[in-house]
Image 1 (tube, helix red, strand yellow):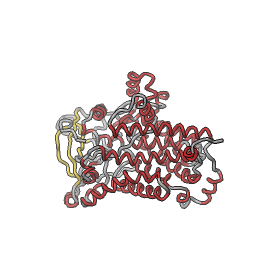
Image 2: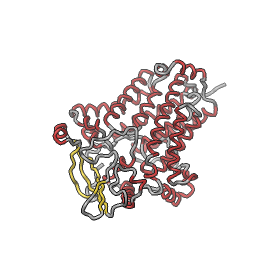
Image 3: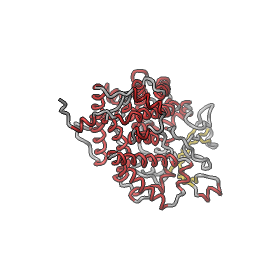
Image 4: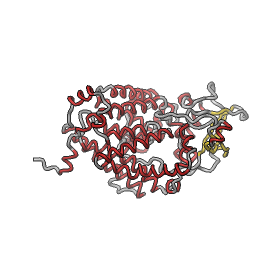
Length: 488
């Protein structure tokens, strides 16, 4: 006789209303994996290769000196065994591209999902500060949970997908409140966001021209969508559909005004589990629906047990991390290491999208010279530079170097460290690093001298744009780092 509590029994029931939804989720997840691996494939050697900014081999050596054999558990990665040079890094990213295509065509689904998770987790740790972003951990946890989808889901697995989406949305809203940032509490955040975000595109320039009352309304809508709407996820169907619609609309608005790589697409994808087959069935061919229904399965005991174990890892790890950040205290020694260890495997993370708002945009212009008189500029592919160049749209690509330059004016130690290494590679003329740039003004030999100038950038007004043709106006601040650090 089954003596399981009613709630447990309900959570372990097959989620038969998500057969088509799960199939579509896996196809679309394969596309996001595809763009994520492709994006890394063209950058990873410049970021972490032998002659890259932060060589993975040096990182592993340092980790081993400090952690011993525990380093392999703290930084789980296949590169401990296959090597940390350019070829393994590039090969791993390209293998991820190929396996993503295998998953897209529905072949060897579970094996492909396991391999994709392991490959991306390895690259996540290999890239160090360049891959330590919330979209990376969001993809890792979504990819991890997806391993259990082929063959049918149960309600506990659907809950874990919902919990991931809830954390992403609600934590982002709550951290905006608890940060104490006057831009959020004063409803002026969008007055600055469009021009101070890391990599704006042309849509941001137009959004910046909107009237102040509309921008303040946008802050209110943001709080509503992040603090109230996430609770709809756990309510009856009509509320879940409303949560999906509002969340998807917000993500589309963000894409229209911001470059945030694949995170908005992944957020939209997670909204699929707020829908069900009654809605998804309207867009899939009948023949495909029939084939998927005839091949229906339910989770067996082994897969059910693994889903339960995943629940027991993700839920407490994420709650511990969340409460620690909100209450600003360290959890008990017995549980904090557990939470930290779980997150090292790409699951149970917290999310806090733009908890503080920058009110100044400080751009760094890097120049080289052989005589100290004539200086030539290193142009970046995506970050603002020439004021007359239109801000570039790069979704779903994530240009890691361009993005990280945005943090450097804070002059925090972690950013000054990698930026110093970057400058060193430019002085050495490292080809893998200069390939990350739009132009290398010294293709034959590196320059004798390098300098970094700091400018404050503002979007031009419509009148200024018509008059000058410029998208930006720039104010010279001085030589970096001999300027006041940007806050925050």
